[in-house]
Amino acid sequence: MSKKMISLAMAMAFVVSGAAVSFAGDCKVTAVEGTKVTVDCAGKMETVEGAAKVGDMVAVKDGKIVAAKKKKAVEGC
Image (cartoon, rainbow, N blue to C red; front, side, top):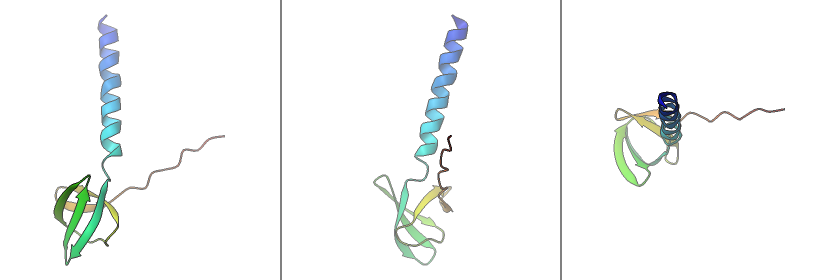
């Protein structure tokens, strides 16, 4: 019984961490004024510091802009 509970807890942790990573780069730049950049993150407008162009998809970390990572393609046979 204990092994099943541990396995279930680990599986749930994996699913939650994967979901959090997928939502990390959902911010779109809406306005730029010098180094002040206004971004729209899922309907929530924030003003952060950084350099970006209007329309860029970015990630926000600690009030600063970091470039959104491009998703890698899944290779197969």
